[in-house]
Amino acid sequence: MYQVRKVTDDLYWVGANDHRLSLFENIHPLYHGVSYNSYLLLDKKTVLFDTADWSVGRQFIENIKVVLNGRSLDYLVINHVEPDHTAALEEILLRWPKVKIITTPKAVILLHQFGFVLESEQVEEVREGDSRCFGKHTVTFVMAPMVHWPEAMVSFDVTDGVLFSADAFGSFRSLDGKLFADEFDFDRDWIDDARRYYTNIVGKYGPQVQALLKKASALDIRYICPLHGPVWRKDLGYIMDKYMHWSTYEPEERGVMIVYASMYGNTEQAAELLASKLAERGVTNTRLYDVSTTHVSYLISDLFKYSHLVLASVTYNLGIFPPMHNFLADMKALNLQKRTCILVENGSWAPRSGSLMRECLDSMKCMNILEEGLTLSSSFQEPNLPDMDAMADSIAASVNS
Ligand code: FEO
Image (tube, rainbow, N blue to C red; front, side):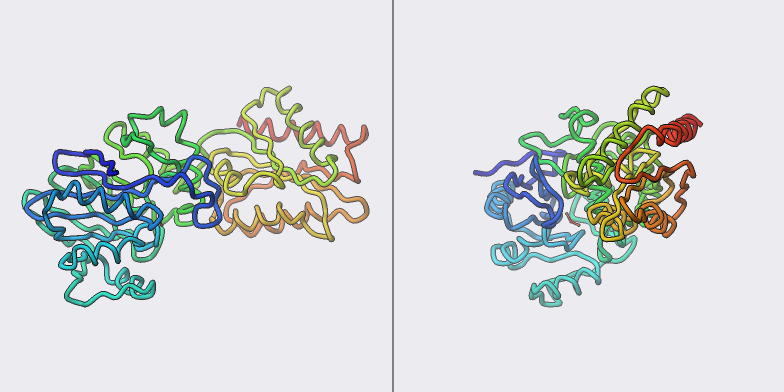
């Protein structure tokens, strides 16, 4: 059965929700599903903006058919080639073989790489600033390379101020009947999923997102229609401000994230004691995570939020405990920077995790490491208390500075 929503008088959301996918990109856990958004413009010409993942293909096609109501599909704009948005392309071509595809030259190369057979007369390639008039609506194409693939562009309907933003401004989580961000309590229910989506999917490409935001600031945007998550029609400044923080790697809040790697609970105990010492000093905006049981996508997401990071790790095979090492590798891969860190190492005969974690952090940009770290020999003991207090003092002073 079809399920569509009207975005403007001429524009319909024809996407669908996937509640069954457990791992987005086969790596990021989903507990509340995800939406694949696609939009259909009815003008003198009919224009579909992006397709959808094949998992929702049947409903997606039903949605298009009900909105077209017997009309043909004239154009398909492909803003982004990643398969969660192009898997249904072949079905579109089979049902509407005369459809013209509007996309970037790089997208054409990638579409061929993914096995789509396209004749050159089926495709209209567009470049920065090109426009197409579909009747009442004129759409301008703005290149958005590496947000988050090289071929990506965004499309702007100048007539109604609608930005089809591709992966930018997207979010994990299914829409479940609603569509607009103002139909949710976004700041309560969605922001953590939106941050986890941005930071893990697009987070590496902050400078490219900055470039896109600069171009977007010159447009009179009234609606933002991303490829995942809700459509924005009110309070656009809220999500723009989040994107400014995330894409410049500036923390949203002053607070402390404590991530520990513990085999038998001793490093965990030290991490917890540090959290209580911080609370005694008035620093209560803290989060404590076991790196072994928290998926790294959640750690990355919170790290984009908080200003301070404590890493506490056992030494394992004379190295960093593997899940902690993985977290550090992901931080570097995603270009995380501008955080204040402090290190706690533990080792029963040759503690090395502290110096090795420092090497990892030193290889990232603009990471400030406080010197009042802590070395434990197997477990936290009474003689370690002065060092713990000095560490808590140092973090509290830095958080409150
Ligand atoms: Fe949802 Fe980069 O694709």
